[in-house]
Structures are given as structure tokens and as C-alpha cells.
Image (tube, rainbow, N blue to C red):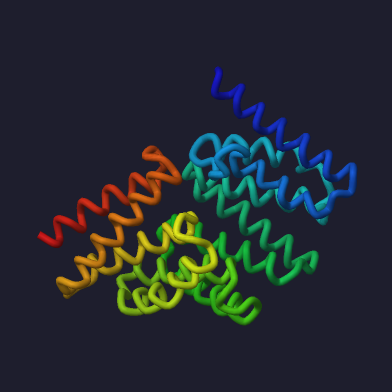
Length: 260
């Protein structure tokens, strides 16, 4: 019961902050305050799992009655899709994301908004094991982000990670390694060593190194060193219970075993 009460409090806090911004025409604060549906105001980490899903539904129920062109309703669709994905309801998440993409195209939304949702659709394809579909769409989104923003932009870094991850999942390791080596330095410079995206890119790069057929001793050593450094940062920033920290610990053990 206490857990549900806390989720209700989080939802109420987010609603109040956004209502205040809308009532006072604080347009520069609306996007920032929308993050309260996804991130903790104290530690600034994203909610995940059942909490993320519960907040996704709470957000959608709050704004679903607004006109489809309304910004809050569009944001709520995104929060719901993310929440469903957090709880591993991937088929439902895909339905929401495809509906969101159709809506954005119908109302003539900015290209950047459409690219973001296309990326989310591709991510959900990947979670549903539709790997070739995910690769095709991620390649398209990454290319369009480079054209729109250039390489030194958060959206481009995010989509580079997604595209390289698809290459890794399809065992196209050389292509994945080349893209990670190109974009990880950009992420470290622009986002910092402790940013979640930087940590995720370094983790997947290490996997690409030690899982590749014919991995050299140097590849294995770099993989172990990268996982050790990334795990240490993740534990400090995210805590030992975070899914990324746990994944890093697990794969560090596998990389060390491969090195032996």
C-alpha cells in the first residue's frame, strides 16, 4: 500500500508543477517540469520498472482528454510508452509508439519530434526481437540526426548508440566497434563520464569487443578495463541496485572469464 501511495504522490507533484507552468505561461519551464514524470527530483535518475509504468499510466490518464494537438497530451503518450516499456509490456508499448508517430506525422510536427519517436519505435522493435526492422529504422534515424544536428548533439549521440547496438545484436561487430570508437569520445566530451548514455555506450562497446569472433588478447583486456571503469562510475552515480550497474557486474565476470 505504501508503494502505491508514493507513486500517487509523485504523480500529484508532477501534475502540480506542470499546471503551475501552464497557468503562468512559463513556457521555458514546461519541458523541464515534464521530466518530473520520468525522473526523481532529488537524485535526477529516471524511474524504472513498475514505478515507471505506474507513472506512465497516471500521466496518460491526466492528459488523455485534451485535443490531440495539445502538447501535454503528446508528451503523455511518450511517457506512457516509456512506462510500458519499463515494465516489459513491449507489444503494448509498440502500439502506443506507433500511434504517437502517426499523430505527429498527421499534425505536421517538427522533424526532431518525429525522429525521437521513430527512434522509440526502433527500440521497441529490438525489444520484440525484430532485429532487422530495428537496424533499418535505427540506421535511418541516425543518418537523419546527423543531417539535422551534426555529430556533436545529444540526439545524434543517442541514435549512434542505438544503431551501434543493433549492429552488435546482429553480430556485425566490426561496424559496431567503428561507430562506438567514433562516437564514445564525443559522448565523454559533451555529456561527461558519468552520464547514463556515456555509461551505456561504453558497456555495449566492451560487449562488442569480448564477444566478437576472433577477439584478440588486446580486445579482451580493453573490454575488462572498460567494464571495470564503467561499473565503478555506475555504482557511484546510480547505485548498486540499478539495472545498468547489475548488468555491468554480470558482463565484467563474463569478460574476465573470456580473458582467462
